[in-house]
Length: 108
Image (cartoon, rainbow, N blue to C red; front, side, top):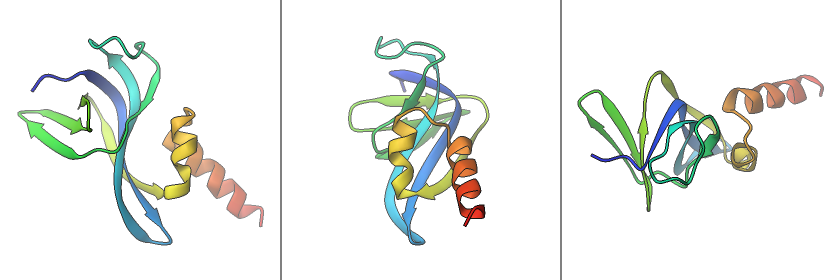
C-alpha cells in the first residue's frame, strides 16, 4: 500500500458524546514525511474521518476519503469527547487537551 503521508507519534482518536460512541475516528500525529507535498515534516496533522484501518506486515494505515496515512512508531488509540475536535484541528495534542479538561474539571 502506498501512503500519501507518513505520521509518527500518532493517535487514533474515537469520539464519544455523553459516553456514546459517535462512530467517528481521526488520526492525529506529527508528519514524518509527505510525498504529496501538502504537509511539512514536523508539523501536526489531524485527518478527516478515517474510513478504514489496514495492517500490512508491520505497517498500520489509516485510510480517509482521499488519503492513505501510514502510522509509524509508537502510537495509541484513545477516546475523546466529540467537542475536542476543534482543538485537535488547531494543533493541540490529545494529552494537552485532556490535561486542560482535567484541570478545568478540578476547578469546579
